[in-house]
Structure formats: C-alpha cells, structure tokens
Length: 70
Figure 1 (tube, one colour):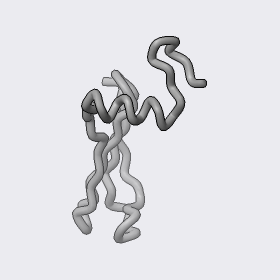
Figure 2: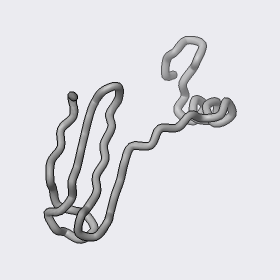
Figure 3: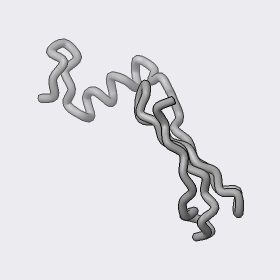
C-alpha cells in the first residue's frame, strides 16, 4: 500500500479525532472520518458528459485537437 493514515484535528469540532488517509496511486485520493462529531470527506470520481467536457475545455481555453492550453 502506498497510502498514509494519521490522526489529525477535525475542521468541524476542533478535536484531534479525525482519522485521515491519503494516497497518490492511481491519482490523488483522500478521505477522513471524525470519530467525535461524524464529519467526513472523500475523493469522488466522476465522468463528465460530452457536453460538460466541451464546456470545461472552452472555459479553460483547452484545445483537444492540439492538446494544449491557448
């Protein structure tokens, strides 16, 4: 396993009860659960629709034909 687990301070209840995990394979992935207040977070995977992808490419001035930002 390439990830790291650790206990840290929860951003919600400010107690050192947040069990956190991070990994970089196959992409940046993080998660955490606070055992005191129940706060949690995780990396969410998603796949854009073709329309959403074109909108993002346009918004960030990315040319898919040249594979470069303009």
